[in-house]
Amino acid sequence: MSERTWLITGASRGLGRALTETVLEAGDRVVATARDADALDDLTAKHPERLLTRDLDVTDRDAVFAVTNEIAGETGRIDVLVANAGYGLAGGVEEVTEEEARQQVEVNLFGALWSMQAVLPTMRAQRRGHLLPISSIGGVGAFPNTGLYHATKWGLEGLSESLAQEVEPFGIHVTIVEPGPFRTDWNGGSMVRATPMHAYDDVLGPRRAAMDGSSAFTQPGDPRRAGEAMIRVVDADDPPRRLLLGEFAADLAPKLWAQRIDEAGAWRDVAVGADFPPDER
Image 1: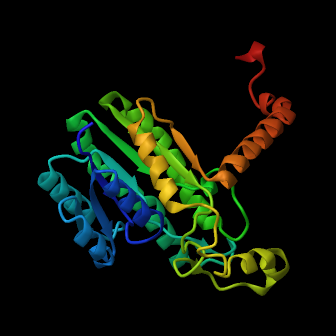
Image 2 (image 1 turned 45 degrees about the vertical axis):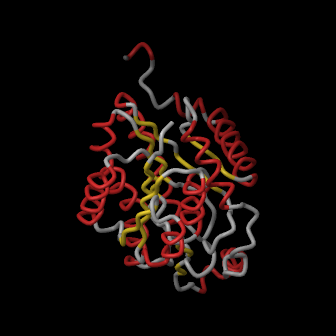
């Protein structure tokens, strides 16, 4: 098809940066946003005709709508939104402060919501579009020491599942992207860490040690190959509702689903027993 316009949030580093590079190399146009879009100046110099950058804090709903409307007016269309802006918060559920918890939700969940709301009028008018909210294998399962992060990703999954059914009649696709560990700074400088409580030292000690930042940029996932996978999804005539990325995610998700099916079967009698008996309905 002809050149598409992608809007990618959180594009200054990690998966967002790699996807921006990959889409540009594939010949499409990108509008890349970040809190500090100057970090993309090298790509702008390399692709001056096909890359626009904008400073954007996705927690500012008015700014998200203003920038999106400006982009739609300047480019004439928005074909793909990648709601990628986000970060990790490490800390036990009891350990995180109110401020830490609220900011995690503001960026990871509300930031994606505002971004998707902002592009939908343009996509509905086009009768075409593709939304790629970036979730995580942490939106399928959950691990200790990242409860608030999981809360945002599970919330994004439910939000996106409903949205997919609402916008399908307008020709708009939704694919929830669920990456495993990719070679970025997700576990490094970009991660916020709550102040540990000594009561959880024995319980969370191993997870805290594993999340000390030393594994950043050593993960098995290749961000550029992740970008190529997302392009394949956008190219597909019948794209998936969910896209697992990386071997870790592809192997773990089916195990988690199987465990839930087994548990539901084991407790089915209890579940069914919560209904009125058939003769009382």
